[in-house]
Length: 372
Image 1: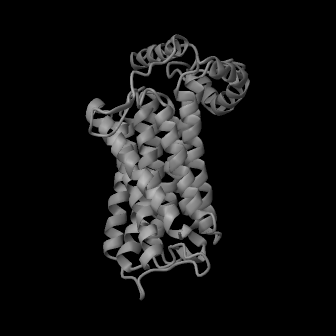
Image 2: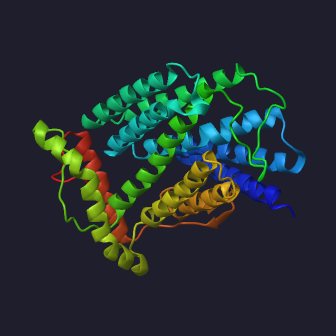
Image 3: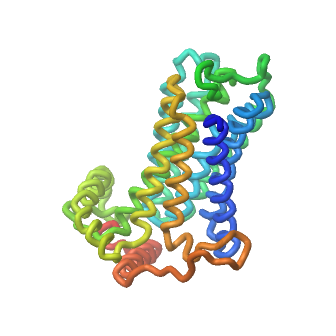
């Protein structure tokens, strides 16, 4: 059996099964994040499916265009948007604003590379747009408005529509596709810079949102030791707020590391909230394909397929571990339950109740003394 066919085929099948399970959960619970992740996993599966079909029967222009839009441009952005909706009632909006800003900045900084020459003023336009959206998301988060995911959606949906327009108006030279001559992995060299610049914009935003969102959720739902205290209460004086906002990333990392021994004990005692191991798996699942995709951009394509396969394995495992997302694991669109009636431990549920109470307090503009 040809690994170049089998590996992307398995990736595609697993991603599409995952998408079906997510959509089935959305039908029952109507969670916006589940529907958005469904789109993301469909794009993941279609992109990998294009690679499997091409490895079996050869590339053509239609496969190449479909692969680039679904796999290279859309997947990470839509998965990151799902994370934004999952954490829409938290202070994660500041992290998402940072993701948007970094994506725009990176898109602007790489404009001088040879493959992006001819993009004109678009890199600057992308940077300004990302900066304005990042500022708007941060402001909405500051005022405890849970509408900031709508701004995140505007960024992702806008980039998606723009990519379709650019793809439709792009004429590719014969043979209509380009692959690495050694590994046969598709490369984006035939696409114009205007379209290629959307790839880092979407991927940096989406991948960073997935990884940071996973770290954020791990921190929120683990039993914590707070070595460094901080507050993101918008009612505090401006200089204190800016200081706390600046030290928050450091404080979260320090507190997270200090809390790891207790989290490990809780894991082995069966009292850990399921979102902690789930989000760790999701972070790993986001990091691996991000790394191999980055290597692919620099010409190292050997691990490209393996990275995508491991990515969907860890992402799927993370979601299955999460009782919040899959309280009942069943065959999609049937009543056949493979694992039913899962519940958090009393200790884990207590943490979740505290998180919910903190969210209600923020919504009422009565911030707790410390950010949870």
